[in-house]
Length: 130
Image 1 (cartoon, rainbow, N blue to C red):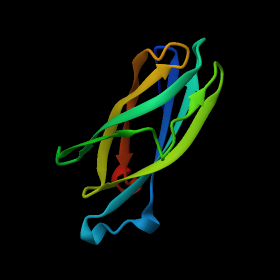
Image 2: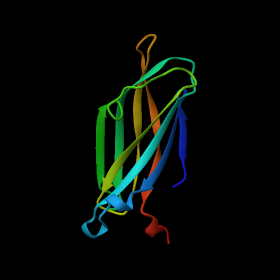
Image 3: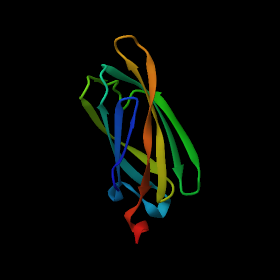
C-alpha cells in the first residue's frame, strides 16, 4: 500500500501497511496486517512519545480502540531531525480495514504535552484489489 504521511505540531508520521499471507487464515476469517511507522521530529524541541491511541475498523465497520503507553514497549526520545521507526501488526476478521489515531508526546524541557495525528491508512489483502 502507498505510504501515508501527516505532519502535526512539528512531528511527521509516515505509515506503510502490508498484508501477511503466511500468518493469515482466510478460511477462518483471520487476516494479519503489518504496518511500519516512521516518526520524525521536524520541530525544534527534544520530545518523548508517551502514549498511543488507535481506532481500528474492519470492513463490517466493527470498531476497536487501543490505548497504551509508548509503542512496542518503548517511549522514544527524539531530538530535532531524528526519527524512530517500528513495526507492529493488526488482526482483522475481514480482508480489508483501516486504522488511524494519535500519539501523545511531551516536550522534555518543560513536560508540556501535545497530540500528534496518525494518518488514516488502509489494510487491504491484495486479492481484494483485482
